[in-house]
Length: 236
Ligand SMILES: [Zn+2]
Image (tube, rainbow, N blue to C red; front, side):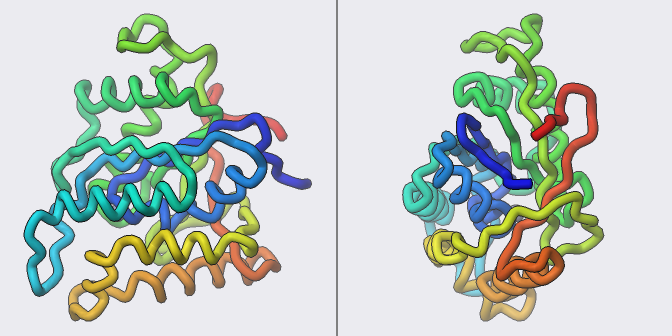
């Protein structure tokens, strides 16, 4: 089976400014190559990701880094602006994400796995799941009209592949350069690789796309699982 993103609109919903790079940038790049509209919604500011040498104006710097990365990919960027560590599945956050869904009109959502390691990732996961349903509910009013139908929802791989059983793999062998260049935009985070309590992000990303690639018989892959819920699944 050949996956074809033509006529699709793919929106990644992530917690932090460098999460899309780690888990789905290759897939977004492949969708873009096929002619899909692509977007990245980053719900948190990334303001708490300080290294041992604290950076002033980190919120501003991380906004610049994620903007540069999205531009490299040619993706529309939707910054949520929530401080790190405070993201929760609340009625206010749901409405905010609903409006983003209705303005971008995704056919597919890529979201953090419900079992990922970080509380912000898990909150983003719950929010994306709720919005993927309510965006098509006419009774939920936001500025833009309700979508005709809910988008499909794919759960993304977890950080370092912990506890995630892939449902399928996307071959991103031709897109590791853009994935790597996008991650390189996040210098404020890559610098943290020297800290004993952090980890070298570029190495972690490379190990993960290689490991998933080896599992799938290609050079590099990203792993996903379909959200098997009413109207959030799709046939190809
Ligand atoms: Zn994150």
